[in-house]
Image 1: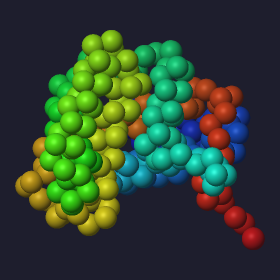
Image 2: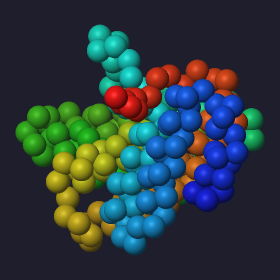
Image 3: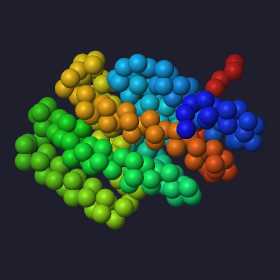
Image 4: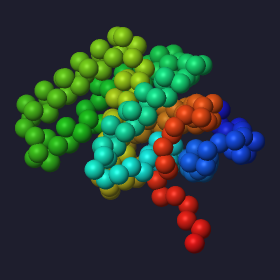
Length: 216
């Protein structure tokens, strides 16, 4: 499933979609297309994350706002509940099990590791958090809890996203090539599956899109 296939479907079905869903899919597809055109991994990673963000982000009242990580974990739980074809399950357990396991055990995409190096945590504190996180991940892996495993994986990817977006990494750096490569491979499959599931369920409440189109 690629941009062209998804865009063709969106054009054919969008008149039956709620405007918020159509806007989400349209925006996400525009970034997915750009990711597919990108030659370098760093650029592809950034555009894939924006495509993912465009699909899940909602506009809610300030006092009810949750963290971004909490928001996309809840979004994944909803998707897994709607995924009758079990695409996400196959992604986690058949196509990318090794990459996901490597990602979950990689300290360089674990935020507490960087908090330690920035003086916010002691060495013992970040190591305890890392061990607890690995236990939680192993529990989810052992029970094949797809939503939780993908949520944890995306939390790690979110740390990598922050490093790059906030200028904490060098373009095309050899230091983070393994993480970037694994994350891009996973996101290239995940984002199209997400858009497919959303279009499969146009009557589901997906929430108001952030920054609506203003025609004035």
